[in-house]
Length: 407
Ligand code: NIG
Ligand code: FE
Image (cartoon, rainbow, N blue to C red; front, side, top):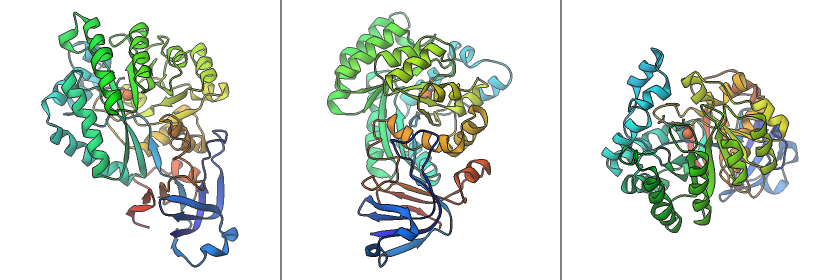
């Protein structure tokens, strides 16, 4: 058992609170017992029974729940720096994809890598991700697009969960693109997904969620509906990459399916937003993808006013968002999505936890929750997201264990 004392500001981030209210407490203390939070509140009210335990002086810093990056494509072969240059020269993301680059080129590189190579590369990213205060990360497959390579990615995630501290929540994204070999028989690829891959993944519990990319050049609404209904029948939760590059009814589909989250949504229309609100589906905003693609940002204010919870995530992948820097995405969400620092903090804690159906266990600093904590070298949430630094995180606790301690 140990006590964090002399906390300048602590953010509770309750799952029941409105998104604008991160539950800030000044001059706080927090008690960790085993792997859980035992007590939290004003230091003046710290119960007598805890005062004799080991205590850590937080030196007036900010204490927040361990950050949750609820949308990444962590495991991939190769990078696509040359496409970055092409986009800067005026070629669009869609044109590059149509010419055989984009997701297709990462599929080729991922298929060509061994599980060990993919694991080593992902491990390297996870080191940097943990440094930033991220303690849980959703991670998608979708760069295999064939049986062995999709399962290889999901198995890499399973093994990585035992090798390092960041908790990985795997999502099957076999419906990322139609692979080249099925370009002339899309139905056959959808049959492979629905008849073989999804049931096998459900049975082996290799993924917790199934996602589909609904977009021109990827999957249409009816194809995605079929795939995601099959996933539900196999015990997987549902997510949708929706309305990223055009408005195509993806938000409405996510709501119809009772999806736990709809991702991207840069082009979501008012009807789609209303449907998400009614269904209680979390909108996952990905400001780094908007930044890198020069695309519009998600209409977060309209969503929050309509009662939709808005998470913030990186979308880390080698194409549209080649960075895992969640605090950068957070500052961008303030600047370009006009979200307040408290709304953004909720978006990477309890709302992100909701986007992976884990808001009763992680993402809040309340008694009984997992002791996943980030200590930030800033006096307040406002200061942290305003004064952007390479890394302001100086302490990380995962399940009650110190994983980083520069305090
Ligand atoms: O979320 N939108 C589809 N998939 C990824 C991009 C993948 C890539 O470019 O490799 C995304 O932005
Ligand atoms: Fe994505």
